[in-house]
Image (cartoon, rainbow, N blue to C red; front, top):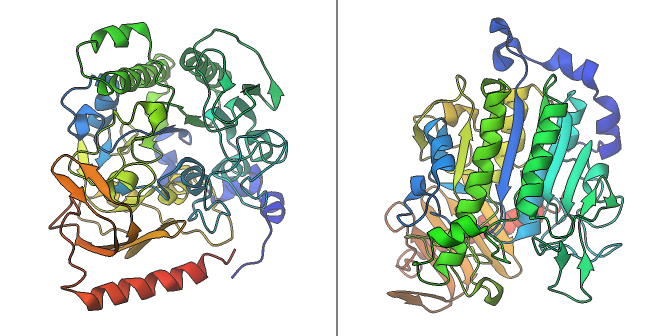
Length: 456
C-alpha cells in the first residue's frame, strides 16, 4: 500500500501535471467543451423518499424533480454512515468513515475536539490540484480549528457554519452549551444577524459561480436542511398549514430547500453554464426522529429505520446526477452505489487524478451510462459503534440493529437480522435462523473489513 503523504500528494499534483492527465474523450474536448464545473449538493437529514420523484405524494419539489428528469436518478444509493460527520467524511475522501478517521460525529465546539484528521485528502484538494477553483457553502461539521476548517482542506472559498447545526436567523448553535455564534467566511467570523441562512447560502453560491464562470469550478453546497431547527419560509409554511404535524414543518423545509436548488440551477442556465456543469444531489442519511425535530416528519417509505440506524431507512438516500448532453436524461439506475463513489466518479468526468492512496469508492460512470452495467461493489459495509451492517449482492446482515417502531412494523432488537433486499426491502422478515451459513459468511467479511479499514 502506498505511503504517500497528503502533503506529498498535493505537492506532486498541480494544474500543469493534471492537465496532461486529462482525457479529451472524457472531458468532451473533441467538441470544444471545457472541463465540467461540478456542483455537489448535500442535504441534511432528508428522508429516503422525500421528493416527488422518489414517491412522496404530499410534497412540492418541482426543481429537484426537474433535475431528475434532466439527469439520472438512483434507487439503491447509499451513504457511508447514518449520522452527519462520518457521512460527510466519506463523501469528502472517497473512503469509508473508519478509514477516513471519522467513525462518529466530530465536535461542534470551536478551537478543538474531534475532527477529520488533516492527513486525509479531500475531494476539494483533488479538484484544486487539477486546476479547479474550489468553494464550500453551508454546513461543514468536520473540524473547528484553523487546520481542520474548509480553507485548510482544499477550499479556496468557504462560507457557512462549522458545527452540526445553527439557528437559521441568529446563526447561533443552541444545542450544547454555552450558546455560541457559528457563521464564518474564509475562517473569519462574520455577523449577518436576522438574515435567513438559506438566502445567504443562495447569495454565496451565486457570487462564487459569477466570480468563477470563466474557469472550471468545484462547489460543495452542504445545505443544512431539513435538519432541525425546522425554520421554513412563510410561503411554504402557509402552503402546508393543513398537513398534520410534524410532517407539515418538515415538508415546508424540504420545499424551501427545493426552491433554493432551483434558484441555483436557473442561475447556471442564465449564465450559459448549465451544459458545462455536472450537478450531483444527495442526502447525508435518513430522516431524524429526534425530539428537536418534533419526533419525526420525514418519510422512509417502505424502508425500515431512520437516522442513526443501519436499516435501509437510515442509509438509503435520494441521489440524482445531471449533466445535459453527457449523462442520460430521465434515466433510472437500480444498481447499488454509495457516496464514496462520487470522488472517483467526479475525477473520471473532470480529468482530476485521485489521491495515490487507498480509496474505497469506485467510479460509477459506467452504471450512469448504462442500466445494464454491474455495480462496482460486490460488498458494502457500515459501522456505527457496536451496530454494523454488511451487504453482499442481495443479502444484507444487520448486527445489533435497534428496534423500530413504525405503523404495522414494530420489530424488536435482535443480535443478527438477515434480509434478502431483492425479496424484502422492508427488512421485516428475519432469515438469520434459516440461513446461518450466510450469517457466518457475512460476519467474516465484516470482521476482515474492520481490520482493513484501520489501514491508511
